[in-house]
Image (cartoon, rainbow, N blue to C red; front, side):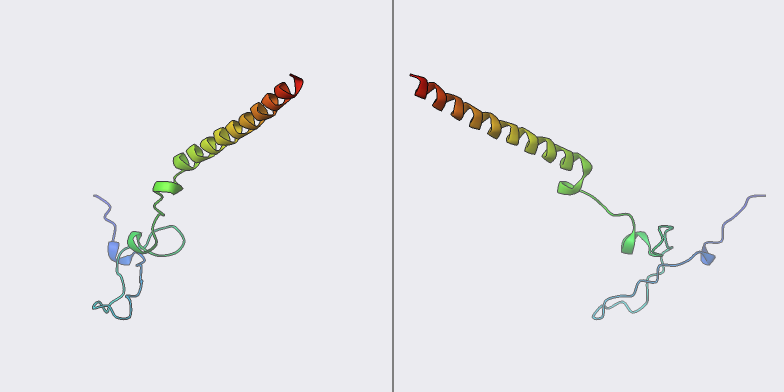
Length: 88
């Protein structure tokens, strides 16, 4: 005999609709186990994309370090060139 889960007894989202919405009933989707008691649509996993992914954040960090290194190198070259001109 198979075990069948009774989905009607699971906790529900219950998110309320906006004030001027045509919908009047609260959301009846199954709530997630993420602690906030809301469904995927109303408070599920946060979607990270674009500028806020770990990959893009790490790329920006590396680029920032490279730019700073180039600035320091340019400044030291300017100082070196000045010192060479003063020697002559």
